[in-house]
Length: 78
Image 1 (cartoon, rainbow, N blue to C red):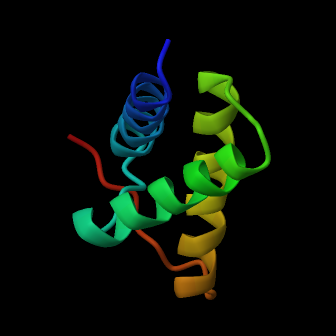
Image 2 (image 1 turned 180 degrees about the vertical axis):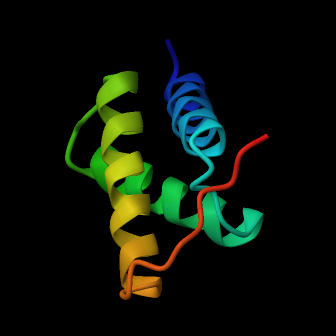
């Protein structure tokens, strides 16, 4: 599998997970955070899609928590 396919798959997994859980924020910002996390991992040699996706999800959640430190985020369903 090419790096491009790996990145696309990892991004799709992370995006879908965050979207289904209602955690996804503004699309441009969310995409940048996810892609930055994936890129950082690629630079360290990581190539496993699920590991890339899971760490990108963790990075996104950390980013979102820093943006809303009071924990007053609402869950969005549907």
